[in-house]
Length: 239
Image (cartoon, rainbow, N blue to C red; front, side, top):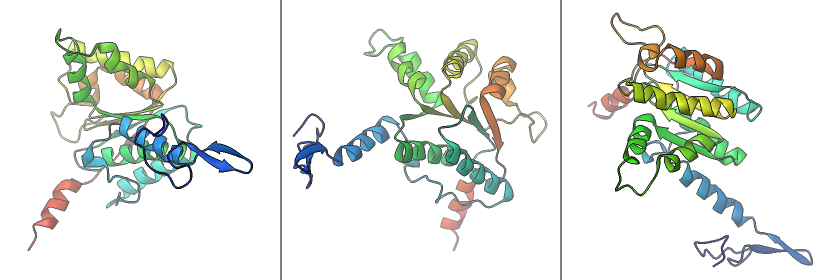
């Protein structure tokens, strides 16, 4: 078992040493690429619920969803020659997270870049938990991978009650990544123009200043349609 192959797998090319024969010498074994990929996927924190998500499994059922999928495909064709992130908005169950995770997995698998997924609510809870004197982590430890990830997916932006602390935390993350030209993909159930009277907008949830910053750093992709999850559940129990 080598330091590069901590699991001790017996690779047929290198026998677990991390080096394979090459002519009269040796070279780094190709198995290390798969080990590195596994580590990148594990570090990305993609929830088990979304492990199946990729562009092939995203099945659009209306024109809006077809356009959104095509936009993501074209976006990935240009990556990493991209200087803006994405803001995927739409009602629950239209596939925003599916598309965001598909993008993230593509960046990791095909480009070998570091990526990270966080439900924004979970991130806030971890930051708040770091203030606990019993906690073994600091706020900096929680935020470092969020700020350093080459591609960050922040799911459910605006889901938390917009307290001053929440807005300050969002602002810090967005501003740091914006200034460092890091790619960020947001998803949100809140639209700029609500579908029904009385519904809150994304600006209501995160504030006008931060919404303005998102205009600078993200392309808006609005996805319409019915709830995929409801359709799947109804089909599953249809007799």
